[in-house]
Image 1 (cartoon, rainbow, N blue to C red):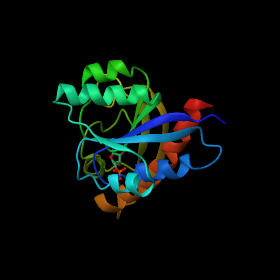
Image 2 (cartoon, rainbow, N blue to C red; image 1 turned 60 degrees about the vertical axis):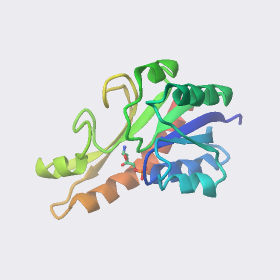
Image 3 (cartoon, helix red, strand yellow; image 1 turned 30 degrees about the vertical axis):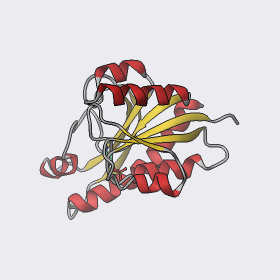
Image 4 (cartoon, rainbow, N blue to C red; image 1 turned 45 degrees about the vertical axis):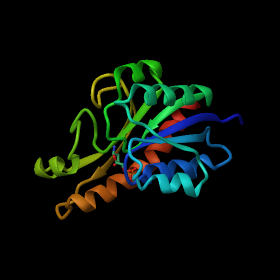
Length: 185
Ligand code: GRF
């Protein structure tokens, strides 16, 4: 199988990155993670890139030259898809245009519900019985692109932000890999 080249964008812990790296190492999984981009040099997720010997780059989207350089690298590496995995910056419109329809994101709620930040807190305040995660295409509006896959989880009465996050993230790891299989099948 000829695997497609993918770049994963992160800002923080990088557990979704780790799960994607693991899936990508399976023979039948359709992608290879060619590089990682982070907007911060301190992102813990960069340790997974180091551990698995995946090249990584730091993106400063306010610096035009840096942004242009990253775009050139991604083109040079023949990147078919960008996976945002806890990437906390809004992508510049020209960046989205350059990869139009080839950027996806994972969000910790059942979109269109709870777009934006602090999803777990808002889910608990609203006393939702069900929440989950969504993998969707990225367009110029926040968390509003076409949905690829969603997975539901139950909210228990004794759940708090920490337990809910742990459950949703377990669902995220599977959902992200399944979404990639769906895209490339
Ligand atoms: C995930 O919960 C994802 O839904 C959200 O940011 C979190 C990133 O976690 N967009 P990690 O960095 O992959 O551990």
